[in-house]
Length: 149
Image 1 (cartoon, rainbow, N blue to C red):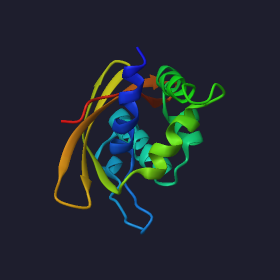
Image 2: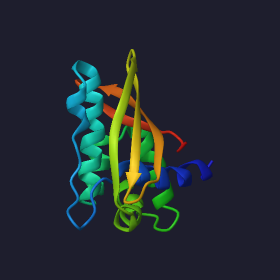
Image 3: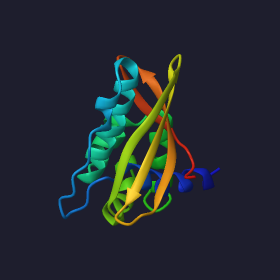
Image 4: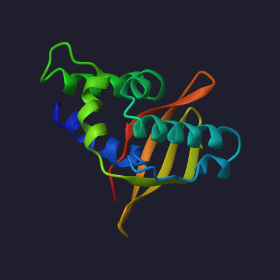
């Protein structure tokens, strides 16, 4: 059971980071959508922004669903019994390379959404990833990280 949360961290880093310390800029792809699709894309954009600032507290407190926070916290507590979700993200966020991320597609089915994103590191390599989001009040929270294709 612990293996699944361990796999989450590299995917989160791959998906989340868009800006490097050298000041790279990225296009806000949430403007390509309307309504709930825009709200889903905006959550991904907010994740990018918080990750670029290594703001694990904001990611855990505002952007991730409770189940995902619990999984990341479980990983953190393997090295520190008092570890938090933000502790679990700290090294991954600090050590990540620069990535450009664009939300390419949003599919909503009731209270669940899938955001398909394309990431591009500083070279020519691109990958497509999926994030699952769950409706939480008026907004959306990331509930699952898909695998990199």
